[in-house]
Amino acid sequence: MKKITIISGSPTEKSRVNSVVNVAKQKLEQSGCEVSIIEVYSLPPEDLMHANFNSKPIQSANATVEEAAGIIIASPVYKTTYTGVLKAYLDLLPQKGFKDKIVAAFFVGGTISNLLSIDYALKPLLASMGCKCFAENVFAVDNQIERVEDHEQNIHFHLSEEVLQRVDASTFDLISY
Image 1 (spheres, helix red, strand yellow):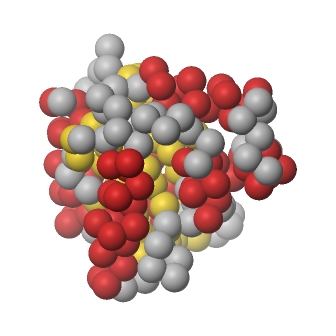
Image 2: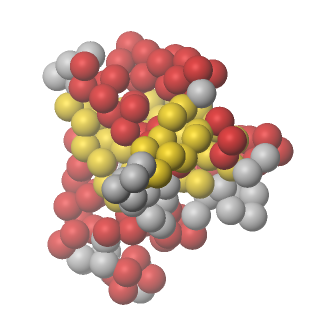
């Protein structure tokens, strides 16, 4: 069974990014993959901010990344790059933590110009960490993910067909590698 780890750099549980992550998780599991999600916001903030490499939760998250054959790095785009909390966690991974792994970026931004954040901000970091194989990335603009609140104040998301097709292509790459 292929192991895939999703690293979500969203600072909140109910974000558009996590709606895309949940769709990918479901597709990967339906294809027989074992999927783990690291929600960076749930790691101890003081360990992230003080780069505590000896933290048990950080070491546990790092072990999950090490065991994975494929990685999805998910983040909203703020000020043309991924979140600071995501960067704080990535800094705690081993220098070659993505060696021999296929990696995909799942980013959601306010405008299409935020798409460049994958190629100019994330990919150089991933390459420096040993990643040589990139899966199809998924980039969505906020308006491609409709946020709906029902009468009980539960939040649901509806992804556009275009975003769903990108998720399909990316998950296919991750499974096929």
